[in-house]
Length: 142
Image 1 (tube, helix red, strand yellow):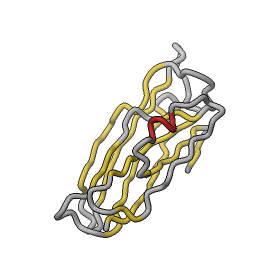
Image 2: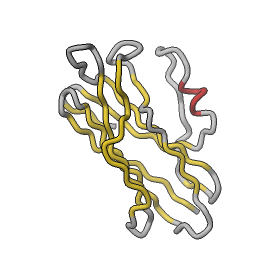
Image 3: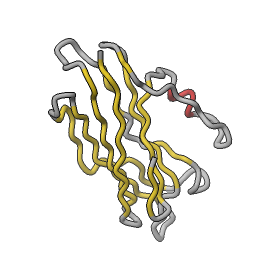
Image 4: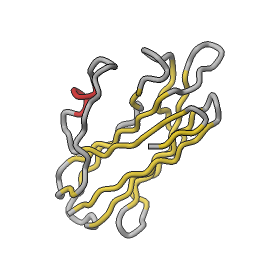
């Protein structure tokens, strides 16, 4: 979890297949996700990017972008996405509430993928205040 200039964000890697149901609750309910630690081949890992307090433009809209990288245990970049829209538009509640990015990644280790520590890096950008948050999480594939 990081924050800068009032913008906050964090990254969760979870094996909860019901993550969406856990997330779709009233704002006062805090969802609890089981963090991915050691993950067997074939089990899905859901990568959730969360943020709070994005700045609004003159029309009252937030604009959060993100760069996403998945790096295997050998240092090889398995996935790289730049300038993805993570959120764009009016917020459904208070800016200080926690919101989920529209970019949810699903990872599943296939036979032939290297065992070991996989890293996920997401750089969140509050485009309206030009503030970046480099976030990182990891899990073991076995």
